[in-house]
Length: 199
Image 1 (cartoon, rainbow, N blue to C red):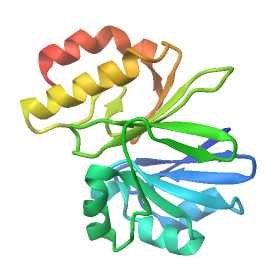
Image 2: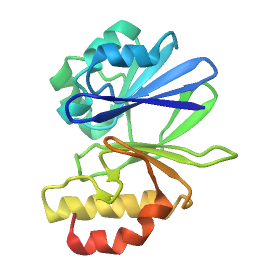
Image 3: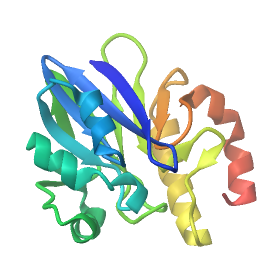
């Protein structure tokens, strides 16, 4: 599977194009449909995954969906809000343990409650080489995503810890919704500090 990306919009959102066996899957049609369609090029786009319902991650969703005819996928708890904000219909509502495919590659869906009720991450674990996590705004270099209450933080922190850090090796690459990639190994020593500071 090949991974390409573009940074779009005033908030520096990362959009990721995953391609395998002549098919493409786009993660977060965040903004700037012209740039996203240039990223996609002539790759047949089979799906667009929206990691969560915040506006900066879906501003180009309707336009890219209309142009490509791709199937639209989102986390079940956020799907209604995404539909209301964009006017699109979410074709597939997913959550923990569901599997998506691009070409011959499987992607495991992980539900991470806290940044929003229905945030999702996608895990690609190849037979050889590094695993990859497309984490949306749930995990960044230096911390978990923004939360507004102690309960939301605890939920997100525990979800990231048990579903990502406890399950995947240190060389797993994290591709966040904003900013540069990191690895679980680089972030792991900071977990206790994140919990103590509460963000």
